[in-house]
Image (tube, rainbow, N blue to C red):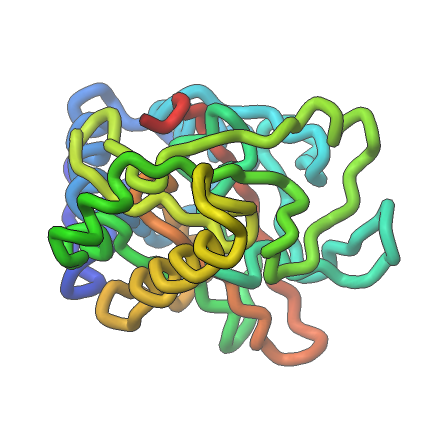
Length: 279
């Protein structure tokens, strides 16, 4: 299977064309796609028309899909979640939830967060609804040497319900929360495949840096978040219907925008694949 690539941003993201994921990639093509992802952190495969089983089969070539029981799922495939502009906090106040409205990396409240996220644009609005990404390799590499030396050994507590959270998050059953204890992750993580270092931040899940008092921890986290989310590190994806966007949570953050016209729907199918404990 041959494909073509095109850079989407000056420092991250590439578009891939010439692939129909109704037929999962052969091993050589899959290895090439993974290489493009490692080089660009975010890839977009254009012009797909996939039922959930075909989407799941193609994404399974990137890793082991993870089951998320707490999210709405397609009837055909439990591993394919539905992310919709109509999502509501069913167990809470019933109000609409904008999934990923602030900068974050998926699953950092878990001890072994997912590695990759795949989002398929089933219905996209006529305008708005972009997804923004930021390059956490570059954010780390640009830090002064003295800051790197300071933060390299630091660890951070991540929680589903962080007191620092910026977004409204869905209410979960008590038994589910009991199965999601806080996790402690390095502030600077090493990618297990590329072996590159990056900042590992999640403004919506981080609670406190171990060994620092709350005020000092908050000040340092806020400084690093402001640094990492500068426009110079960012790529903003304008969705087309049929796009599949795949990103590496181990070296990026992302956020969704809910600025589409009232009454228009944004409907995505999502697959996430398993990762390892950050180091």
